[in-house]
Figure (cartoon, rainbow, N blue to C red):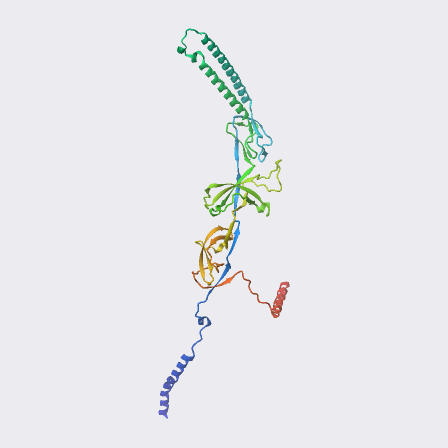
Length: 420
């Protein structure tokens, strides 16, 4: 019994080994784990991209900018003669509108009137001296004719005929005339007048003030025309239509639909120092909207110096150009397209005009090309993709009756919670 038990204990491991070998082989052949579904598909998945059809069209390019209004003519009225201010025009105050030639102030002109009378007297004296000299010359000619036996060639006829004295008298007369003209001008300059139709900005003189030559009296601005500078990119300069009026707006003050216009004057010779854009000068006629009687026309909003305006400039029409969204243009002037073989390709383009939202280009697209309507990310030329047209309407699954009942119950519960 003991021998049998001992033999049985020794044979158990051998039996276990014999049984485990076939079992292990079975498990290796038939008990393999099933791979996940994503590992079964050995094929590379295609990338899904959104595309949009390429379209052609015509456009009148416009550029929106802004500008600060400044004066066309802004001058300081200076005293041209010295003296005491005798009178100041009572309406010549800051903000007053005066026509050309209206008087502003008068310098005491007594001294200048006396100086004119003195010069006029000297002129009369010079005229009389000339007439006397002419008479003396006539007498000299008669005396010379009466002389006999005198060699005419040996005589200094110019002296005999008093020609130097006549020239001197003529010169004195010319000087006297010039002095009279100077005195008249000085007398006229005692009356300070408006050089053009304008408004007074500041006044720095009063009655009784003592002024010298070149003393500052008034500062005035021309109200017939104001100027405004606007900046445009150099790419728009070639498209800019200078014959078309610029549109001026100021929505917050004038309203949304109220506009004014400005005419092209010139392209300034210097670029803006900050952004290197071209500066264009525009002229605003009758900026203060004045009528013939100098009253304000209520139908047009007035424009003042230092007003900040929104300005729209128009360019010449672009025809038969491809139109793409501005975000599709890639650095280097190309765009990504999906060709008819559903692969990504690059297409070089020539930018005709770049607007705020759309870009107008010329390009050699191939039939079947559709523009990528999203940022491409990391892609390469020839990458196979699955294209979805963003303009195609999506199919909407109809809601069943049971789903409607569920939605109605949810809405009722939501309303009940709102009441509580």
